[in-house]
Length: 238
Length: 238
Image 1: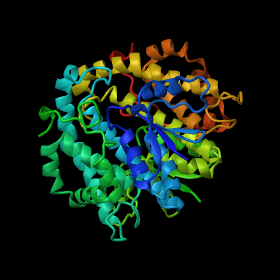
Image 2: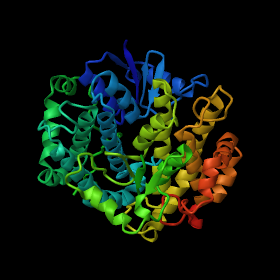
Image 3: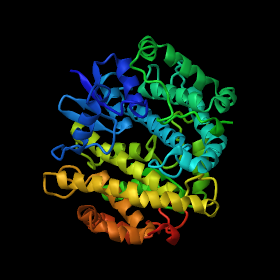
């Protein structure tokens, strides 16, 4: 079966967490909205009144007749199907808990450049963005990175992954978050990297995994840009 | 087995979604932080370096030797144990998808009064809060409410619940979100209620469920206040 991923065609965004899981799993998938007319097909599906499980927003995944939305929920589904999470109930929920914490961090990273409204341009909320980004970099980001450093240090299997011995979708997502933060806030991340060596080491190891490395070098990987979640505006970095 | 819920003692906050599920399930639980010295015990547990599955933040739930955090993740766990979600894989993920969408709405509702930083007082970001609340009430909230209205209308079982025939944790959470919104934005909600009759009707039906009604009338229900997620500031309502 070939999955169909539906997400905005010009950004990594939240769709990227799903792409990374599909790539690591070696799963066959179509990135529907990136084909001609694909974004229109995506919007038509979202608005289809006959759809029993409509998504609120992209990304969503079609798997045969099933349609699943919300990034963390899609990963819960793919994690079980492709061994990207432990089989045990405890390990499965712990992986999901980490993913939801990463989702909170992603939302806060987004709001550094859009603290007032997603419907307004960055330029119309630049003053507020500077305030929010300053708080994010001095309080919130160190708290999140410190948490994941602690989780990595606490994994007693010695594999330096977040959960147990294997690579989970939470590892892939932490890789993506660190990639995005390094793009958006190179100065702040250079400083924070020293205090969070295990988080940065995980980032490097995930990037070097064969399927992920091949993906990152391919045209399937959309470059970071100033339309997505992680944006580089020099005045917001420190 | 008696659950232990850990959450800040003076607000409903995100802990309330867990409380409602425990109450509807008729589960025995201690609301630990509300007892003498309970908040200190909560903070000690969070900081315990020997804890293999540490929470990033409250709420978290202890179930025997297990410790589970992230509101939606706790509900995923309780939903399976207490029949507050369908048993089928598709129904289980659909319920969770709705919960995650409600979690997004909750985060946006919170940020109406704290658009710049949770670490600052509301009074220090009042100007920005007015801008964010105006966008929330005119764009985001109608979009969310319209979505849940559509989901309720699309449930073909005729039970006027979100998922299948039974009451799920997503119904309880939608009740809580509507309760909070009515408290925070009475004028805006009075206007929006007309266009979202099924959402409002679900709110009434959940409030009338025997265990929920008993809970709401008890001292276990902390009143809404201006320290929680849903705060009533007249200047933010319209």
